[in-house]
Length: 394
Image (cartoon, rainbow, N blue to C red; front, side, top):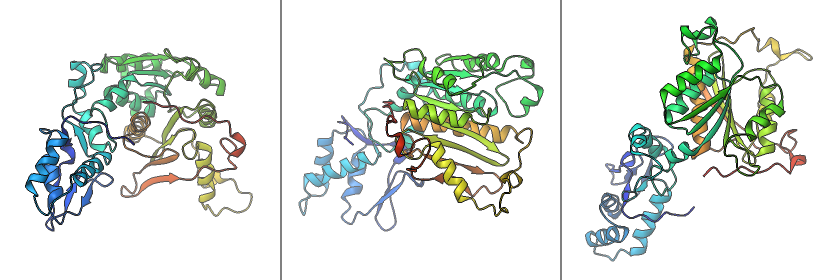
């Protein structure tokens, strides 16, 4: 990883350091996964982070630390290395970097609260703190399913500043939808969901391009055609950067999505709810397990203690509809939108090939499933060596 040249290095406001009672330096807030503690027996690390306040050049920072710690001689190389380490850890931004010209003043005002959150969770050096927001603006996302999960995901993505979102949904709004599909209103009853969704989403953010079509996905060919015909798709590359799957029928649709995204090298995520369990799966071809790997590993992990020949349906009953309310649907949709931000921006830096979420019965017990890529996987195993690697989304 390279360190961007910075005019005026500054510790990110969200990562402001403090000194502990024993003289150590804590930086990056006290959030698990972000914060760190640095031993500082001679006190110069604290001087360094204080000097990195956005008013000095890198050379001036080195001079200031040397001036305040004159003896024994502190090598300039040690100070520079410490600045480099802090930058690579994601704690530093360039106070002298101008906002990208591609983002208008109106957009910077609109996203002025979201950018600091991305900056807080970002653990990689950037040319500008606005770079992740710019990536969202340039992103093209295909969303299949605009019900409870998909509607919440679409709402969160459009509000967050995703540049282009194309939605696919075949159904009409029914009264029983309104307990959890909060994108719709009573006045939308009997209206195609896609029409009502587009109206609501366009009213939310006119800076985003939101399109859609009333269509049912009937096989892998439909998904492939949808993914590869996005406006602006360069020279045979998939037109969309990410596929988000929020449809639950037909039951085999996740296997289709896995198959097509492996073939195209497209990152994707799928989310949903099962009673009080809410989760999202995140996948990138060539990086970790695929959906099939993860599913097979989870089947092997479970010990249902069923008699030989007994169908596992008796341990995991299926109902004509999935019990759900606005909370479980909204959480799953927000997790799906969060997964899209992870895939597009690398924030937070979570490796794909996993499923995570919440068990609302036991709020302190997270859901986390991860496995290695399986050599015998029927979708991405050794015999499928021609699977393309992930595309660069930068």
